[in-house]
Each structure stands twice: as C-alpha cells, then as structure tokens.
Image (cartoon, rainbow, N blue to C red; front, side):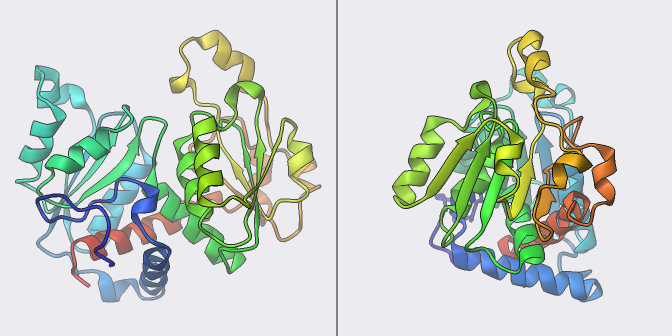
Length: 316
C-alpha cells in the first residue's frame, strides 16, 4: 500500500477516515479481494501467528463478525471486547490507555466507538495498525470499502454512475463515508432521498463541493422521485439509537419502505444495497429480486476486510 497517508510517531499505518485510502489503494484492495474470492485456500494461512483485537464500545454484529471472520480465514486469531462494561473502561480507563495496552497484546486493532473522533484520537496512541470500525455519525471507512467493492463488482466500474441514497442521511455514517469517497470518482451523480429532518449535513455537502465543484447533487423527499434514475439505490435504516427522543424516531421510522411495487420503477440493471441491519425499510419480498444485492454485499465486505488486514500487516 501507498505509505503516504495516516501514520503516527509509532510508524504504523492507520485507517481512520475513508479518504485515508487513495483511489489507487482502493483499486489494489479490490484486486486482492477478488483474488481471495477466487482462490481462498491460497490465503488461508498468511496471517498465521498474528493476533487481531476488536474493541467495540457500541453494539455490532456484522462489522465485528466480519472482521473476526476475515482474520480467522487468513489463519490469524482474534481477541475481542464486545461489551465495554466488562472491560477496564468501566473502571474509568481512558481510551488512550486502553489502546496502548491492547496494542501491546495484538498486531492490529479494530475500534468501534459511539463518539465522533474517537478513532482519530486512538490512532495517536496505537502502537500497531488501527482500523476505525465506525465512530459516532461521522465515519465508517471499511463499510465504504465494502460498498465501493460491491458497486464495482456488480456494475463493473466506479465512474459515471447515479447513486441514490435513501433514508437517514443525517446520522448515517455509512452514507457520509461512501459519498465522500465516491466524490473522487469521475462523473458521479448523487440523489439524496430523505425527510427534511434527516437530510445530509451541510458540512458533508460543503466537502463534496470543495472536492468537486462540478458535483451533481439533487435532494428530493419522495423515493419515487429518485429511484427511476438510479444505477445504485443505497437504502439505510432510520437509526433509533441516534435520536434523543423516541417520539421523533417513531414519526420518521417508516418514511421509506422499499417494496416490489416501488422497485418496479427502477432500472433493470440497477442494484439495491444496504449496510444492514435492516428493520422495515426493505420489504422481505424484495429479497428475491435479482437487483437486491445486500446479502452478497456482506460477503464481499468480509473479503475486502481480509485484503485490508493483509496489506496493513504487510503479509502479502
């Protein structure tokens, strides 16, 4: 990997932000993930003797298990803290001290934290490579890797596409990470489908415009207004855990539900993605539509995380 981005005085490469990876590095990881997919047995022991620690300060099933499965499939082993109440954090230990300590046990650390900026802070103290597994509503760089790999896998390119994001665009860190990364791709158009209360933050839109003054962004409130033009429909759930009161959540949770009837207006070669877990925003009847790729997306995510771990540990 190009070693020009995020390093600390420890000399370790960290992945904190979706923009820590260059377009060339994305391409390299996708190429390696494709090779792993084609011949997994050739990579089954490249991390033998290596340990990965997963520190998850908020609930997660898919991201944590995806990382752990990735490391195990590479022949490595895993240490995990899935409940901070059972760790020294409950005694008042700082994140900096936790990272220093865990980094003395493991060769690589994956951190998920509810506070924005936590991964950036942890990277200042990590003595081994650190991967941000999601922090607050800001960043989720390996979900971005997953999403971009999925788009390339099914669409054959990462350029000249119309991507519609639907649902919680205000708090959805997967959306924030992905749209910032896609801004660096040629000829992209973004359709933002959300209620007024959950629109993409102005800061993210300003970043997009700063990166590409010609970026095409359209905001609509009805899914019917954005779906027909989309090459990619990226659905998200309304996240209960991001709301300060349940009344606001209940009012908005069923704003967008993708049904077969609604999907009938989409392009025949469009794909429907979702970072999962879903709640009510995609009807189960959509699962059988060949355009629904969200479960394949989860599998591709494990493969690209395998590629990232291998590159950060420099075992290949």
